Image (cartoon, rainbow, N blue to C red; front, side, top):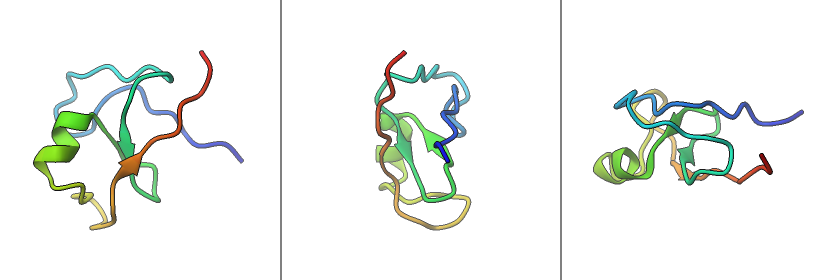
Length: 59
């Protein structure tokens, strides 16, 4: 089972997140750009979980 590699930040919806871009995710795969994650103190607004660096996948 692979992670769902979402292509946009769920907060600002402006930041494109290709599979090789830095991003933050929670255990439910909610996905945010690094600036949005920093602004939320690395806490997912959907589940309250910790946001951590998303692993990169080869394009």
